[in-house]
Length: 114
Length: 114
Image 1 (cartoon, rainbow over the protein chains, first blue to last red):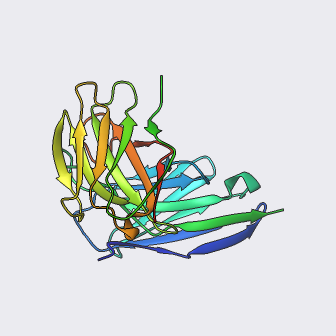
Image 2: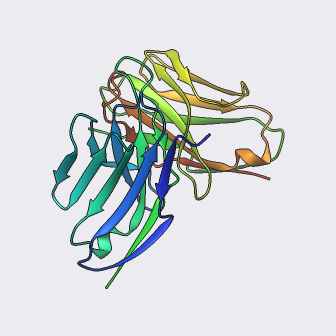
């Protein structure tokens, strides 16, 4: 059972363009939604995260938009750069004090071309 | 401050064998989580250890077991290896159990089962 659905599977964006990756979740108990960036041969690294009490969070070129009623959230990468080429995973977890297990989406492979 | 390290980097085993993977958590972290990442997929939660006790388990059979030591390093053991166990095994460390505590991932161990 896939609790976090991610799309698209792959994305090609020109340098300077906007990259948009979407995720949808099913479990309304989720209360923490991070995005991870993974380069080949490396483990995932936290990029940005949001709690459901806000609709948007921005850090530099990276923005998360969150729609609680639709159970959807998305990552926007502004002014995309070749160095942003990586695989991006959305994730969700729930409950302070419980096992903070992350439920990941299936990933989006982003390629930023010159 | 030393990050999360894992050993070995790569491992090849045959079906039916047993394997032990090791993880050293980031300094100051008392929680270690293990994930299995199949090729082209997002990481799947295996289990988590907090202060040497198992604290949550994903949908993995009992032949996946683990340990956490007093220095908070951890081992993942897999018995009776199957072909489908071929994957990247990631460990992540964090401080405490809060859902929004950042988990820092190691580079992973690539296990191939022949």
